[in-house]
Image (cartoon, rainbow, N blue to C red):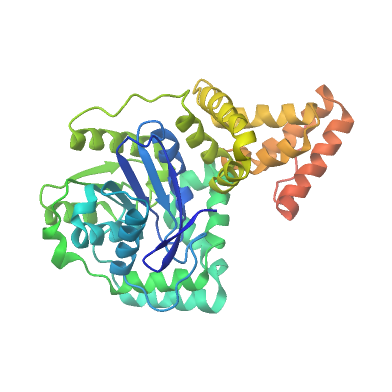
Length: 402
C-alpha cells in the first residue's frame, strides 16, 4: 500500500497511466475515498496519468492529530504533487475535494493546469449543522449517520436500482476514521473561500448534479459568476456523488474540457495497453489488491502480471460489448464449474460492486447445481458465506412459483 510523506502528512495514493501523458489529479468527497473515482480512472488510464488519493483521516491515509483547515488540505495536495515530481495537473475535486481544489488554485496556482469543481461551493453554511454532525460521529460513530449520508449522495432511483453497488460505498464510508471525518466537518464549517475566488486564474469548469440537495445548481452558478471565465455544466439524474452515479457523462465532460485546455485531442484510448488494463483491473478488483499483486510480483512474476493485465483486463474486460455486471456473473459461474475457490472469492465482492444483487447471486449458484453439479454448487454456497458472512442473509426469501 503506497503511502507517501507529503510535508509531514502521510497520504495513500494511486498513480496509473502513461508517464508522458498529461496528469489529472482527483480529490475525494467528505466520507469517500479514492475509489469514488474508479470509473474515471479506468476510462482515462490509457490517455492520461491519473492520480487519486485519500484525504487525510480518510480511507488509508492516517489521521494527523489536531485541527485541520481546507487550506491545510490544499497544502497536502500540493505536497503530494511535489513528492511525486508532478509540476502541474488538471485538478478535479468533488464536495470537500472541490473546496480543497479551490484553495489549491489560489495558494498554489502554478500547480493547476485546469480546475474542475464538482458538487461543491466556496462556503457551506450553517455551521451548526457541521458541529452537530461532528459531535454525532465522535459520540456514536459513523454508523449513526451513514444512511442519511447515502440519501444525500445518491438519488432515490440509484439507491433502489444499484443497491449492491451502493453497499460498496457504504462499507468504504464506514471504514473511515470517525475523528478524521469530524475534523473535516469542522474544516468545512470554518471555510469561506468567497473572498479569494476572483484570484483563480486557471481554466475552470463547474459541474453540478441536477438533483443534488447538498450543493444545488444555484451554488454552481454562483461559482461560475465568481471565478473569471468559468463554465458550468449540469448533469441530469444525479445527486451529490455524480461522478459515481453518472460516471460516463462526467468522464465525457472531463475529456472534452481537458482537450479544450490542452488545445488538442488526448491520445486515443488504447484498450489493449497495460495502462488501460490496469485501470480496469483496479476498478473491478480494487486498488489495494492490484497494488499488492504488483508489489509482490518481483522480476520473475512481473511478465505474468503484465500479460494478465493487458490480455484479461485490457482486451477482455475492456471490451464493452458485454457489461461488467454480466462479465462478473459469467466469471463466477465458470469458477464454480472449474472449482476455483480462490478466484471465486476474489471476484465475489467485485461482482456485487458491478451490480450483481444477492438475489441474482443466489439464483446463479442454484443454476450451477444443474449445469456444473451439486457438489460444485454446495462448495460455492460455502465460499460465498466465507466472503460475505452475515451479509449473505440480507436477501428477500424467494417467492413461491405456485
